[in-house]
Length: 495
Image (spheres, rainbow, N blue to C red):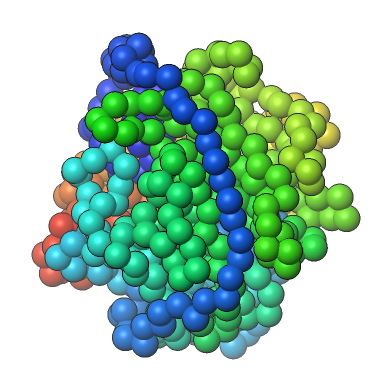
């Protein structure tokens, strides 16, 4: 779960408290909002350039990915992706994965996204060598963005890094063409041929099959941009979605988070359109994203806003946009204490949402404080067609969503509790839930260390094998002691 009225003030890990009530966090935010100053205007410029970029041949170990990007076909979407077909091929499906990995480096490492190509190659994106726990907007220090491609058995095919004098992190990845991918992330530095706009800028880089960067975008303004998703439209246009982080200058909070989505034309080297929430001091984020690719593509974004304001309703929402960024419909899934964290388009065309909620309107009464839900949404008008919910007696947070080759739906996240048949190992454990295409719970997997564990990325390959990536502050893979915050990749057995 990315940001929550009942959880972290910043996405994933930034300032995550162990347990907070809705009233406590809301009151705290209201006081902070009252102290904020008026935000300033924005400027934005973007162009594409060709950039060789650094390619690191060094073996990163058998580490893999995270919630891995979208697919340029049926789903431009989010961590979920599209149906990979019903058969990954006998040779591919008989291969044994030996790539489970925990980084164990002195600085902070995280995996933010995982994706598996149709040939079985596993990609992970994230950062390494960062510093966490010092500011609200993380990471800091001289972290570098990392994209690692693994062979189907887990050996490293290539390892690409982006390392300016500033801070970099890679967030998401999507197929760009045969053997190529686009990766989106953020930087406080300047890529060759670009100037930084102020704080964290967005970057998007196309990598070829060997891991060399062949096309580069950097764009930003005075605010810290935080892209979460990237997709590719039918004519090669890039669509990037996310939010501006808390906007602070000279120790003054000028504005809360603001969601954004924009389209870029790589061939023309320019931005086609851009939408950003302009609500002052009302935190809102776009965290979910999907494209239904067609001659007239449908763009869907989701997230949450804390309060009603002049732009519309608060709570968890989904917004459908046309190819030009114009709103077709807006639907609210919960007035408060509800997040629509992830979206995906299934292989048969259904729009599906996943998130966490404290309310009974999505799937009935819950099991605990915050429960995981999935829902099918009518693409034409945004109505909820069905919803199911499950959870533990404690808080359960959804971070990633995927669809398998037979249409089963997979949800991954973090829990403070224990799902049936499991025992929580200490703090936040990892979980993966498996549902049928109609929402019947089929299987549950839970695992954790004695410390904090976080699931950030999820992918299911054409052989129905589940890959999970994120970070841990304990020992998840192997027996060696952790080095602080370590990235991990695992293939996990979900019944």
